[in-house]
Length: 280
Ligand code: C2E
Ligand code: MG
Ligand code: MG
Ligand code: MG
Image (cartoon, rainbow, N blue to C red; front, top):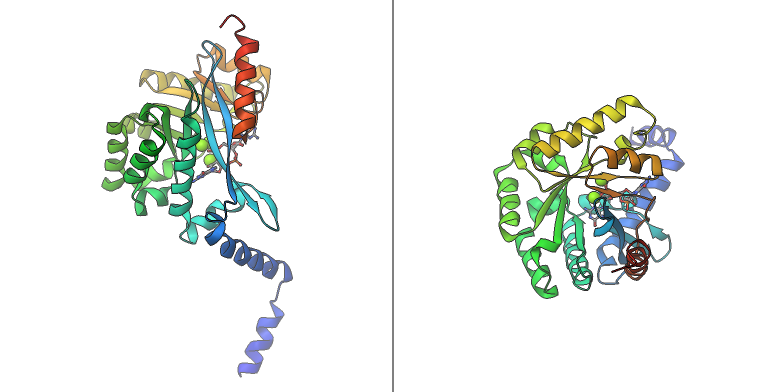
């Protein structure tokens, strides 16, 4: 009987599935040592304030220099890190590294993505406090980006953590607004300092009147609640013009720069500042 089970199993053998499983195992094993081996790097993407045309902050976006697979994007390993218990150690490293690098930036904050797992299992408050202290970075320079999954959980613990971060002076942004079950009610309840409108809503904002209406409504709703608005994925001048006209506060996207290593971002920012504001 066992033999025939074995044959049945073989019948459903799918090489591509196995290749994927092997790759996941390979990545999973490598994840556990990647922090110590210094295989992660933070790239930084500028967030530009439309009033005054200034680089007000940069978002830290993690990359993994995998020893055999090359440069990996977060979509290739963040979910795996979450499942394999690496979200907390990786997240701790990201916070420390981002604060350390941003401490050298004059008048420019840093935004860090924090996963729901870090909220629940990690000692996030302690990590943030230690990262800020070690870098001597004022808390006002750090923005923590959370997604609405976290708010959907609606747990007391998450709410307390958010409140404590605020108390510390750290700012909070709701990331990826417009993709989930959003959210107007969450924005109203949590009153984050910032709301980031997802790329998918920005993409057709200059060509689709429905999307334009939606973004216009989101901006005015956020402003009514004294929440400032960042548009993500701004790639064209037409999108920027629309957003500026609607009073959007900040923009982020390939129109300005993609995420780049710290030194490249720093050089880009110096150049942007001097070309736009030669008098300063
Ligand atoms: P996110 O936080 O919404 O970050 C914005 C993503 O949009 C980044 O992708 C960025 O490179 C991309 N992007 C920016 N401008 C444009 C544009 O003009 N056009 C297009 N098509 N895309 C643009 P990335 O770096 O691949 O990161 C993907 C996601 O991975 C992030 O989405 C964030 O949710 C997550 N992530 C990144 N770094 C970390 C991290 O350190 N910790 C955690 N927990 N998650 C992270
Ligand atoms: Mg983000
Ligand atoms: Mg986003
Ligand atoms: Mg995202």
